[in-house]
Length: 82
Image (cartoon, rainbow, N blue to C red):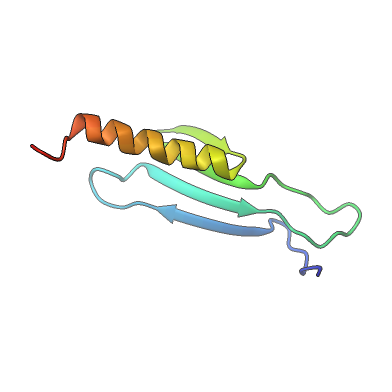
């Protein structure tokens, strides 16, 4: 089933707010699936921007790995038994 073509496809964005997370932006992008010749097929993935540094995870396993690494780092920094 072909979806309507849009210039930027479908976007999801979440800017975390608050003094400790004011510079964090997480985006998800699903490119247009119209199938028309010449349609811009943008990258599908999850983008993470923190303090001016950006990265994109191009598959679900990469996102899951990032989440697991952040959880391990947080547990190391702030153990639950403190």
